[in-house]
Image 1 (spheres, rainbow, N blue to C red):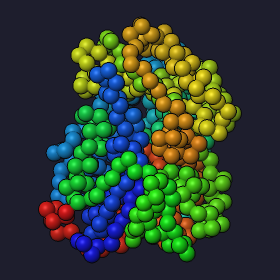
Image 2 (image 1 turned 90 degrees about the horizontal axis):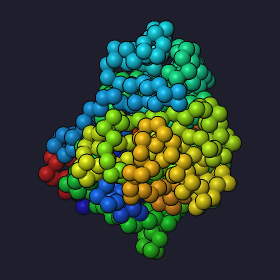
Image 3 (image 1 turned 90 degrees about the vertical axis):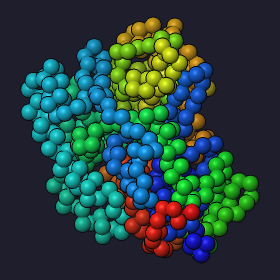
Image 4 (image 1 turned 30 degrees about the vertical axis):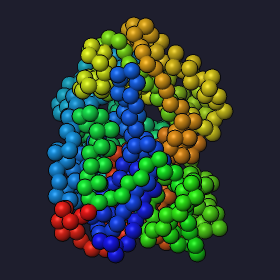
Length: 502
């Protein structure tokens, strides 16, 4: 394989890892570089005082996308890492004290809906059918298809019109669901990929059916264990990996990518370059402006970024056995709070939270008799005027106090080893433009052809993977972006046997 062309993959988020594996299976020599100490991009792992914390994605859906990566080399994902099905998928806690367990069978969900508002059971069935229609188009047909050609986009206009893509996710849910608590619970999925449910196209309601089709899982040992399993596969396949390695800029001449230059000054030459860097950062800071088409310059200037994230990590010196693995804690405001985050760019006194308690499924995340927690609050990105050195400790105290009054009584006294990440950390650690949690927002005007293209506009041999390109954020999205790249880049030579891959 010494004469095979070299693919340089910059960034080891799941999009970068999946791209490296798929290109290796197509016969390329592959070098993967990342600026962090360990692979995974935002899926880092923290260890504090005997507690383990996944720093990035914690929800696994569409597990077949991971299985495919191992099967490319005749391997089984199950032999590397276990996926544990969760039930419920999410437990919603409403500000009025109500609880809604979401997940299991359709009948399980209908039973939960019936407890809140029996009239919404029929509406849920209709909503699920609407979600299925969007899934069949948006995911099954289009998620792994290239959209660098406007012709491809034009072909989908009839589908988008028929499915009322101009309507928001919240509009679609509200058309079928009457009760306000259920409207909130069944419209929150866009927040999982960085979108405002009141602005995100109803096409993204496909997430609801995607969860329903395959379920929601947790990787035993955490998302970090999944990254470790993929690293084993890459090393076995002969992929060269280098961490603690930050790329300063790409080398591009006459709009042809030829490699990259590291912060150390070292040059890396390659036949093709795959970037798993946030494309907003990539085209603002790592690609010379004179090498960019006018259309690309406009896109990078007008792109609307997703919200930021405040992530609080802590352990507890006691267990909270009644708290589900995934909990959505909703504050008293919904639309107004989202407007403060996305539009007004203000840090409100109230908040809504995603709470991850992995010890509900895997007790190894904490010492015996204790729990590990990860609490995520959507906040404005760095385009807001927020001094996080002052606001972060205040927000931490407000969150713990609110949880103490509701979900976690006594947590203010029992919380230990607390630390946090703010949008400033996302910017510094992951080169996320303006500290956005999910790159570009998933609006209709920033989807498919309107998003940063998987094949860089006007630059040969440069390809883009990850949350900021098609099809978007979330683990299924970034894994599908690698499948798009696989279709765009021709095979060099089919590998015959896994043992010969190295």
